[in-house]
Image (cartoon, rainbow, N blue to C red; front, side, top):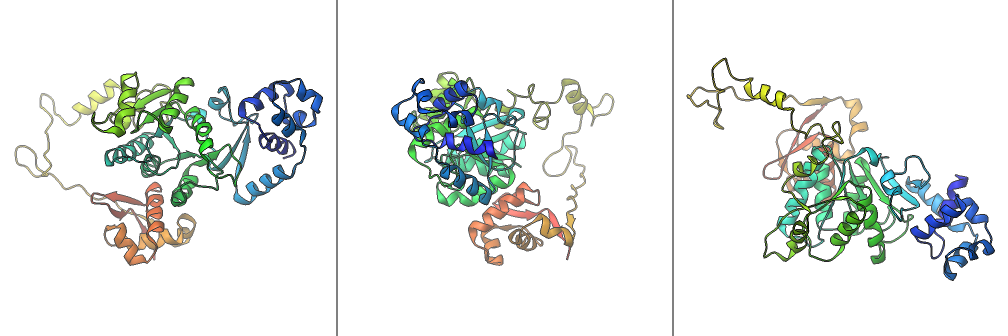
Length: 415
């Protein structure tokens, strides 16, 4: 804790940038030595007057306030010299000296992490694509990383949560300052199954000048960046540029040639980004590197696949192909599939596994599948809480979404 306060002092000094902090650490080795250096030592380094004045201010009020606020909010602090600090970020030319972390501790260097980015003003096509890729990547074992802005960021996160997560959002402000505010409940879901990450201390508002530095972290902790839908300029293209500078892979979803929101992604494909139409197109790039993480999405070895193809057939007989009507081609009826039995949640376990809202929703879904609006009407819980709870219940495998946006309980609550 003593060492940590010097890190917070250094990163909150007036005029400090990640590049200058890295230079100071190369010279002094530790933030504590930087703190106890005098003005004459600072004069020997390539710093401007504003930065020297900031370093000469030894007041510890700000670091102490940040520490207290992190303790109150349950926010962890990770520094550049911590063993758990992502190696992918450490290799950047300007790594964040401190990361504020709310949620689960994830070992990024062991994850097939993919950033999903795109426009804040997407088309319906873009929204469907972002949610589809988020779901398929998460279901395939990848770690989905995004911002939490309105538009495609939110769509990708919701898809990844439905796919089983975990999910990570990198913020342009403090982890307690969600922008837009309408996504604060979505941020709670992310923190519950993954993490919210920022290089800015709690209480810092999201500002325009924060997004470019944020984007370098977004791409830096990932193996690749997927651009779903964007113009040929703007934040998405800036993130892609960071990815290229960091030697990360770039993927792009193609769009209609007359759709201005696909100008950026189509251009990226022209310039060499991999054209992708499903999560598998991305996952296949990393099957060899992460065989266990991506096992569910990886193709079967040829001999296993062939054995499974031959399994239904008798010697010298072709496998019988079944139609959707439940009959074989020769007219014989096939047995109807049996619905799996629901897991029964013991009464004493219910409170520890689910919130009160989630329990009320599960009780409401006990008899038959319902739409979200019907759940709101029957439970009298606000729509935003119902939608958030339904997402979390899907992540936990307690609810599944059926065609027509109806939801079905997969567990039964003991009375």
